[in-house]
Length: 402
Image (cartoon, rainbow, N blue to C red; front, side, top):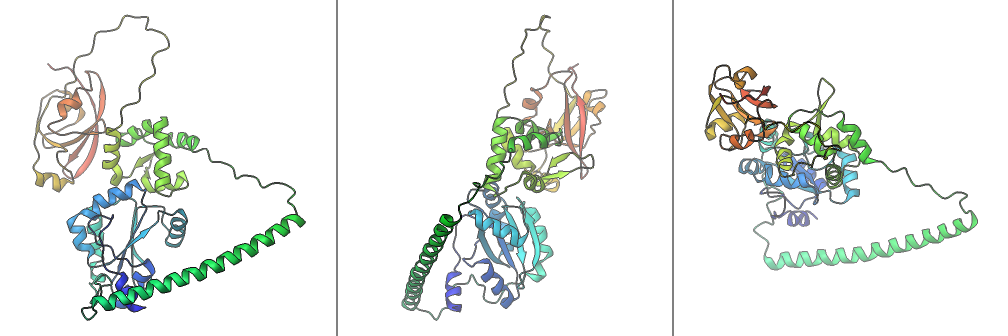
């Protein structure tokens, strides 16, 4: 049996990023951890989970995360089947996929990562528990020992396959007999004691109505405000429904707990770790068409407003500066000059501030003219900046170019 476990643990490459996951089950991985004195890195995922794919492409394809994971026994738990997902959620107390939990040899949880987790977050947490994650002498992913010949391995595997086939036949026969006996009993009982009233279907949950109620509790600021507008549309409700189904989330309240934080004002905002991928999603979706006015305007249309003006000069950021601020290229630019009395100065912008978003959309030195083109003089918008190490949001009213 020990040899079979070792043989089954040969590392293979499949979905899951660049991390090399073993073929061990979670129970087998914990058993190996108990013997070797190391820890188990368990990844609970589902094949249809969109955030799992992003997890694979981001954190689990990061070279530093891949190298750091080698100190652990790596186990990948497929929760694509809803029955398996329910069992795992109940047993290990998590909301849905993707989830990563670190176990010790007793099966106790050392650390957990709920939802989509960035590479930097993984590395920081894994480094904290690194002393406990010493590499085992012979990892369960090391494969067969050098003393075994190909013929011996093939003979052992053939014998295992035969035993499994025989065992499956016996189990199928036993199950068929049990089902046949139980159906016969149920048929007799139904004839002798027919039910007085047919069973009622459980009440259906009106998810659209729940979403409408929740959007009233969402913040109107930044990316959350854009998501709120999207969730009020039919495509937005369909997106929420599909995302919950893919992640194995059955209740909207569980989805809210996983992806949102509740502020002191009682309003919900999207968690910071989901900001980037959500913003990319919203940028790819066209704005919903506005309803035409029921009655034509009585007054003649006014002349178009003049283009928006801020009154600042941008400067490029280096890759090192972006990395220090936690930004990805080409996001962000540094304020090099603020004209006196201009809208930027009135809004509170200062030389040295790093501007990262206008109206909830990422901005760079290159795309700033395009974003500014969406506004006219007199319009207002939120400008997100980083001052020092602190992120702030300022309210600006655009003016006219002097």
